[in-house]
Amino acid sequence: MKLSDIIESIDGILLNDAADTNTEYTSAYSADLLSDVLALTKGHTLLITGTVSLQVIRVAEILGITAIIFIRGKMPPPEVIEAAKAKLSIPLIFTRKTMFETSGLLYSKGIRPCENVPADEV
Amino acid sequence: MKEEDCLLKFEIQGGEFLDSGESSAVIKEYLKKIGIPHPFIRRVLIATYEAEMNVVAHAEKGTLCFTIEGETVVVRVHDKGPGIPDIELAMQKGYSTATQEVRQMGFGAGMGLPNMKQNSDTLVINTEVGTGTEVIMEFTL
Image (cartoon, each protein chain N blue to C red):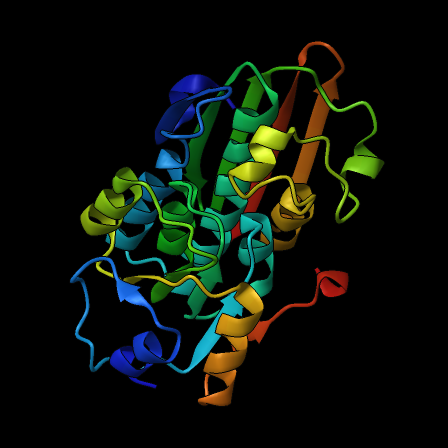
């Protein structure tokens, strides 16, 4: 799914101009807890999260996350947007929709779960 | 391991959430530069980051020492802090003593120690309640 279509389908706003809006995305992971993101995601993925702290950018850097969608109208502070610009060149997207709705809308358009490690297998 | 044996050494301040995680970024660059494959780097970074965040979340201060011994990456984190009264309990997935502030940053899922164990080849925890904790992780190439 193209970034431009992702943004449109969740009534999103692109917070930076880091990425070509024609870039294709195929998988996502939804979580607020960064330890869950660190423990349970595998491979490159789009992250859907309500956590707007600077640590989101660290985790994205470690895992090779390819885009971050901030949900529920939670705007990351300017330093987070700056850090994303300085450290990674990945798109940051803002939406007022909930995590469930954001995930559901993207799933219905073909985005699939990233490879996942269930917690009882960690 | 003696301090002078560290290839890279970092000071960690308890409670300093904004600046934390820098060690992972530096270690990532180092391992990339010497040509270590990405999946291995990822394991080291996840475990190291969790160990650093544990110090930030729970301890007063600590040091992180990164070195390579032959084919093995060794990360040793030593902190001055409360120690872990019950390691078995702390190792349980979902168990956490993190504060609300820590949870708001996106941590305190109770996955830190399980995550460190999962991503390292050996994990040794030496802890003394009221004094501090030492974590030694080894990753073999």
